[in-house]
Length: 242
Ligand SMILES: *Cc1c(COP(=O)(O)O)cnc(C)c1O
Image 1 (tube, rainbow, N blue to C red):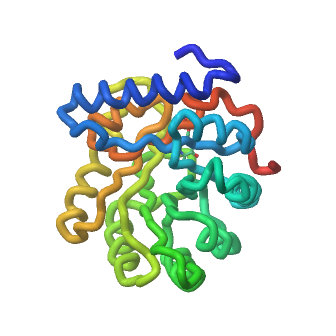
Image 2: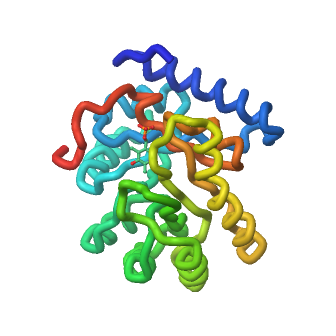
C-alpha cells in the first residue's frame, strides 16, 4: 500500500477495509479483529492523527517514551479522552510500576516475577490490568516469551491475581514471507488459546499478526493485530532513546 508521511488516516482506513475483507474471507464475525496501532518511535502529533482517523488502541514498546506521549495526550482531555494504552515491549522489572500505573493492557508478560509485581503495583481505584502472556513459538529474534507449558503455568498464576485480568496470548513469530508458513507458525498459539479458553472463559484475545503477516494471523484466529509500519510508515529510529 502506498505510504507516505501524511497518509496516516488513509493507511488506517485501508487497513480497516483489509481487515474486514479478511474477516469475510475466513468466515470470521465482522468486527472480531481489533486493530492496535503500534506507535513506538512516533510522536504525539502522529498518534493524534491516527486517533482522528478512528484509532483508539495504541501499542508502545518503551516505557519512558510512552509516558511522555500518554501525559501529552491525556492533558488534551477534550480531544483524546479515550485512548487505550497497550504495553507490548520486553518488560524490565524496574519498569513494572510505571506500566501498572499508566497502561490498560500488557501483552508481553513472560515470567512469575512480573505477574507478582504488576499485581502489587496496580494502583487501587484503577480497573483491572488486562494481561496477555507472551509465547515464543519458534526461532524468534526476541528472547521474550515462554514455551507452551510455561504459558499454561503463567496463565494459572495470572488468574490468581485480583488486580489482573487474564485476556489472552501474544506472539511475534520470526519474519517469513510465505503465507502458508506464516499460518503454520501461528497455529500452535491458536490451539493453545482454544485449550486455555475452555479453562478461563475470560480469555478473548489472541494478539498476533503485524504489518507483514496479519492476513495469515486473521486466518488462524487472531483477534488483535498490531500494526506499526502499515499505519505510520517506516520507523526512522529504534525509539529507545526517545
Ligand atoms: C513494532 C512491533 C509491532 C509492529 O510491527 P510492524 O511490522 O511495524 O507492523 C507489533 N508488535 C510488536 C510487539 C512490536 O514490537
